[in-house]
Length: 362
Image 1 (cartoon, rainbow, N blue to C red):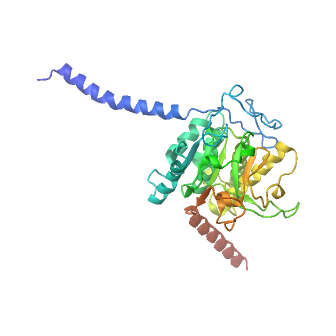
Image 2: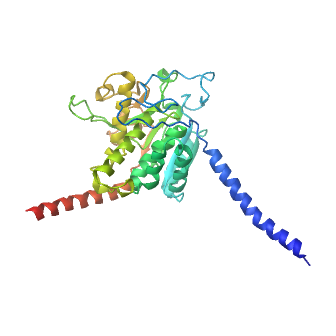
Image 3: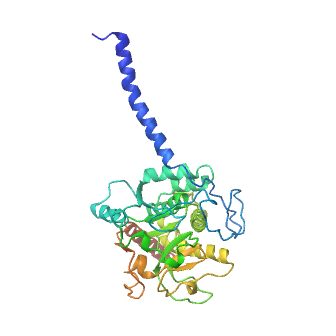
């Protein structure tokens, strides 16, 4: 028969075990996501310069030196890509970890094609925790936006930029299949260059003149970057500022933004704002205008400043008519985006509202 003392001890042990397990998991969770670069500076919105360095102040951008193991403690030794500062890690995100069988097959293509690359899938919940762990100290404005923004596609777009900005690596949507190993992505002529970011043309259009908006567009379902990429930082700042602008124009908080308040997702968080931000970033780096003339109609990958731009066939073969003179497709995009229906419905509501207002005025 157990004594009272032994019974109390037994109960205490049973209670202690789950507590220890939970604490251990929490420690492992945050240990895994310890920031590589803690300082993600908050730029001065009134300044055209890129915010860099540890001070958080806006400075004139400088072309980064080619890293070496002796110069940078953030050097990566990659066996797959031979791009020393882009880790061989592929990131994905989903609402939950219960993804479809098709998505599972597409995601697994990355490890099948490049077995040495690591992969991580973040859910809505773990994605928020990731952003909080990396940005709470230096960019509380980013944490506030990601935690209050209610539109799933806007959150998903912003989250991808934040994840790769924090740790570097490759981004891939769940509906993308890797067709060629990562080692095939970068031509030999660029292997030893400092490549801050890799993007691919979604739409490849000719230059339309100095007064026209850039016609071409980079896709954001696949891209790659160094940790603390200066180009990704410009993209993140552009998205945050755009969201604040929409909220202010409609006299709401970030949480109150709806799809009816703006023309198109691509201009707020998607490929168009990403493209414009990259070109502005390159313009500051190179001290000249960067536009369609720098990459329109390219047949091979081209390094512009510190951004490697892939031809249309690389990431968006179907969008570009499956060109046969631009090499092989590196990925296949299956266009399973779930946000398009919600976006179309919002546009229809906006159209109906405008029609009702017009009829009322008439």
